[in-house]
Image (tube, rainbow, N blue to C red; front, side, top):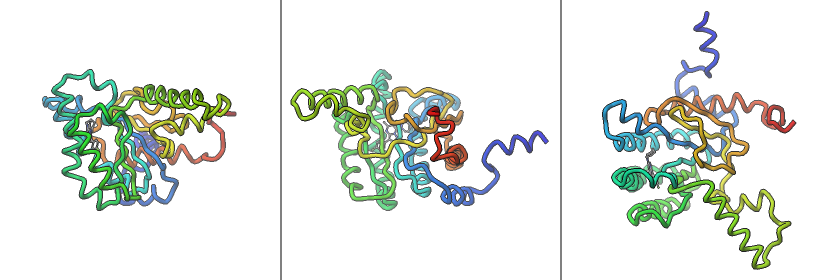
Length: 264
Ligand code: V07
């Protein structure tokens, strides 16, 4: 009896992945999913491995989740790969992290191209090491004409800094007389963010049990659904991704009405 009740709470976990994909695709799929990929260090610690082993395993999860996102018809997948805060980590760990884009792309770029995935990046590009810049630049160029999933890496990204830069640009436009104070509105601010060309995230996922935003897309997630899971990023799989989207679709059944949106 108890078991039956509990089973109802999650969206049909006993169905096959193929069935779940078909069911998810028959409903409204979030256009933009953003993920804070947390728990790589903890995954390694539990196995008595160095933190970098967790980062490396996390990179393989990026590949798996990109595939399922593309398969589901998600338009944009933004992954928080490196924050402006991450520079405080030990140099050896930073050096390792900065090699991951190159390794990821030399392994998976051919299949990204084949799957019509477009690689993009938000964040401060200039501060990255040259070899990291070159790897990302090459991937962006090689996939520039693709129009399937946009795989958007947040690298050296921090949302407050992004907002500061946006306000500076707007202030400059006012100072040189191109626009007036009255022209400032939500859409103008949005158009000066690094995500100006992308739809806003509909769903934000954070793994590993932390329930914080950590300076990620503060402006952009104003209307997003949040999904938190205790699963560590290297263990996050297609089934976990489907669960997050199934939950999103259950919650979004009232989509279109303002009921429960805090506005009424
Ligand atoms: C990183 C693996 C995923 C878990 C989070 C931390 C470690 C893929 C990339 C990447 C970035 C840009 C790009 C292609 C791949 C990456 C960093 C860390 C810094 F164009 N995974 N991954 N970059 N981790």
